[in-house]
Amino acid sequence: MSAPEIVESDLDPAIAARLKRDPAGLVAAVVREHGTGDVLMLAWMDDEALHRTLSTGRATYWSRSREEYWVKGDTSGHYQYVKSVALDCDGDALLLTVEQVGAACHTGAHTCFHDDLPVRVEAQ
Amino acid sequence: MSAPEIVESDLDPAIAARLKRDPAGLVAAVVREHGTGDVLMLAWMDDEALHRTLSTGRATYWSRSREEYWVKGDTSGHYQYVKSVALDCDGDALLLTVEQVGAACHTGAHTCFHDDLPVRVEAQ
Image (cartoon, rainbow over all chains, first blue to last red; front, side, top):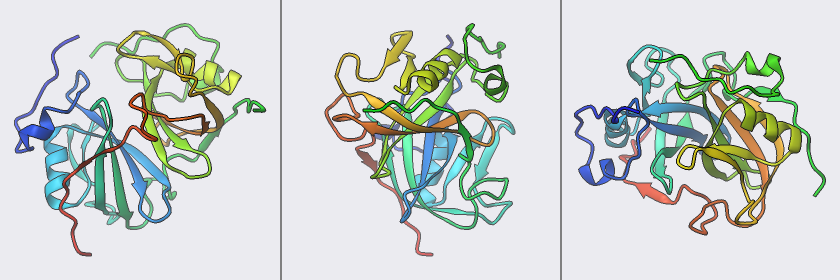
């Protein structure tokens, strides 16, 4: 596995030192809606996307398919105003709490998680 | 980027066909607590981990550090009884809703997301 690719960024070095990036230099960002607590989507950030998110208060991701930074809402108007960001215990995931304008999902659904899989629910 | 490595699994082929795996053959699994809605942790699943989760009702992940399947709670007793599993719109993330026994985090914290980062909160 190759070393993580770290794009030069203005991210606070103390925060950068705590990130455990995947081989593409990314950490996962779970996005939760302020107020409802609904889990809206999962996206990806490199150091620069996290820096832009923390310094502007607008959720900014790295698009793995388009290979570019992506301010959520710039094309759809469905911005995410960030209320808080928490890093997890092993540094490979972030939890953003956001005010979501409009639908989070590009399909127009409230959240991206709308495809239920069949699960055997065990009696406890 | 190498082709995704797909471990042979008993996962329903109709579900397997909808997964968009990373180069290591994994999808992200966001774990939310039933009742409170708290986001507890993020872990990783390959096809077989998802199959075991769906067929047993106990959250089972792939540990990237230990490179082995991991039934959450087998060592700690902090099992996750799965209430529902949803796949996201682009097939690279799952949302599990679980009954969490004890603490979700190995540090003993309720959730793994307990390290707040400073964010500029924009007035809307």
